[in-house]
Amino acid sequence: QQQVKQSPQSLIVQKGGISIINCAYENTAFDYFPWYQQFPGKGPALLIAIRPDVSEKKEGRFTISFNKSAKQFSLHIMDSQPGDSATYFCAASTNDYKLSFGAGTTVTVRA
Amino acid sequence: ETGVTQSPTHLIKTRGQQVTLRCSSQSGHNTVSWYQQALGQGPQFIFQYYREEENGRGNFPPRFSGLQFPNYSSELNVNALELDDSALYLCASTIAGHSTDTQYFGPGTRLTVL
Image (cartoon, rainbow over all chains, first blue to last red; front, side, top):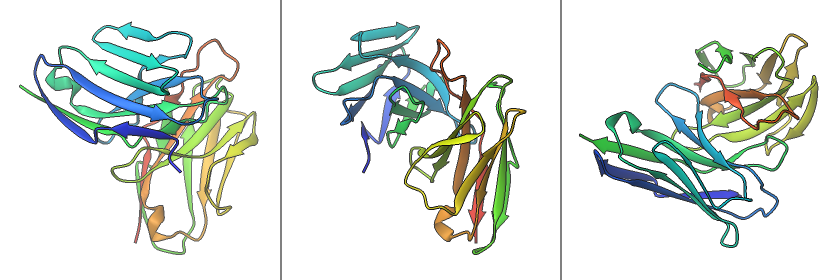
């Protein structure tokens, strides 16, 4: 069974807009929640990650919001740029480095 | 670049054959994990090696096996290939116990089974 559920499957945003991707998890033992960005023909690259002791983490235009009680976390991409067009995966793991990934969200930024 | 390389880039095999995929991690990375990414899906955890020993396996049959070598390289072997094995195979490495949890992914090997 899929341990991390991700939505939406795809989204289109105008340049300068905000992209929001949501994930939900079941395993309360998860304590590490990274987001990966993947371009066609490339491996996933770590974008930003959070641990459950904080509710929000911001790095540049990327922000993770984390709701431990709801077992949900989300990625916000502010001021979206055409270069942000990619597939984004949320993931979760315990301290064993074995990642459970969501199904992915394809983001298209229109100029 | 992540410093993790994989070979070959692409591979075509026929059903029933065997395949070996290779991964070269960064120096000092004592933990390597392998993932299978089917088209349009997220990566699925196959297994992990820590200091040359298998350290956990996902929901994959025994015909998926691996090795990790002292020089920070590793292999994924798949026997009796099936059509559903067609996927992008990714390896990811890290230093277990280090202050960072970052896993570095290679570019993957695209396997096509005909």
